[in-house]
Amino acid sequence: MKEDFFSYQAQTTPHPLAMEVSHARGSYIYDSSGKAHLDFVAGVSASILGHCHPKIIAAVEKQLNSYMHVMVYGEYIQQAAVSYTKLLASLLPPPLETTYLVNSGTEAIEGALKLARRVTGRSQILAAKSAYHGNTMGSLSLMDFEERKAPFRPLLPDIGFITFNNKEDLNKITKKTAAVILETIQGGAGFVVPKDNYLKDVRARCTAMGALLILDEIQPGFGRTGKLFAFEHFNVVPDILVMGKGMAAGLPTGAFTASHKMMATLGENPMLGHITTFGGNPVIAAAALATLKEITAGSLMSQTTEKEALFRSLLTHPLIKEIRGKGLMLTLIMESSEIANDLVLSCAQNGLILFWLLFEKRAVRITPPLTISEEEIKEGCTVILKALNSLQQ
Ligand SMILES: Cc1ncc(COP(=O)(O)O)c(C=O)c1O
Image 1: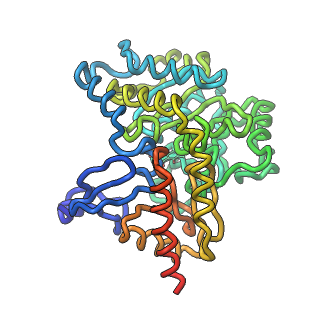
Image 2 (image 1 turned 30 degrees about the horizontal axis):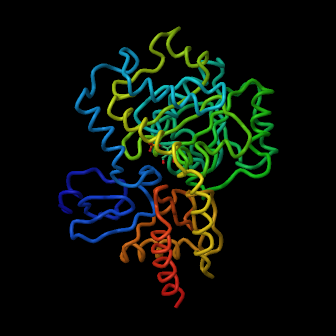
Image 3 (image 1 turned 60 degrees about the vertical axis):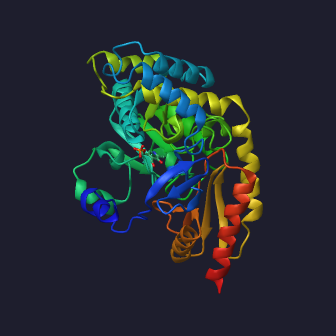
């Protein structure tokens, strides 16, 4: 299987982890030798309810037995998608009321960019340095690392960059700006939380200039930081909210939400302003609906604060310089990228899954399923501390 993986399946790096997966349940992934791996990564923040959550399986099975794909997005009335978008609207502040369902995070970003240009009639988009919004051409244009963009140029024109948490840079938002796009909490940059009233100031400047504020909650969304969406911590409401990853608890999806009036512009002048075959797919929408109900019905969201505190209290070690992030979106900042790398690899050998961040190489990702138990947190932290002790020697 390993040889075939390298021969026939396109690779993203020369050195993937290449664990051969047998099955996964709850907070554990089992490899083909039967070994259990405690999952502190959750498929990079996507398997938000753990693996194979029974309510998600039941919702998917029920939908599979009625119908799968029947029509392209937007033509037919399909109960799961309608119920999902209605429930989401009831949980969001105005004017976030109408949701466009797509297939992935990056497609949702593309839709949000198109919507911002369509609504404002302007072209300039400002993104934050060290941001990650996805890998299709538009999303890639929002990345400020030239070495990653150069081979794929030309990309989108009229993209500018501001420094996250730098209030002086807000002067770059002008009447030419269609939108400012930010991750509410920066992911790949090292789980950077907005300081003081930064997001409120961004919001105010956007409003003053007639620019739209797009918040990318693809990673922090769906309860990961203790609120349904992380912007709720910071007293701001974006014009366009983008989501994905945990939205359907491990099935591929994405969405963007805005006011009904704004969203209507994608359906006229020209019609079909954004179209997709599989967006809003009923099976995935059923999973998304069950996920949203599960996250909001019980105490999973409030538990993330207690679980964060447990992680922070257990993970004290001289090699850990800082723990950044919020809720169950945490990262250990190590002294060097070498230590971070050794920690991930050593834990992998000892049955604990950790992962790297895209741009901050001293960081080690801890984004477990929200359903992780206290015992599992303790078990994983013991593995981390043991690994750090041996790295220290
Ligand atoms: C903040 C953020 N935006 C966008 C994306 C892209 O999402 P996808 O990989 O589903 O296209 C990601 C994925 O890691 C992300 O973390």
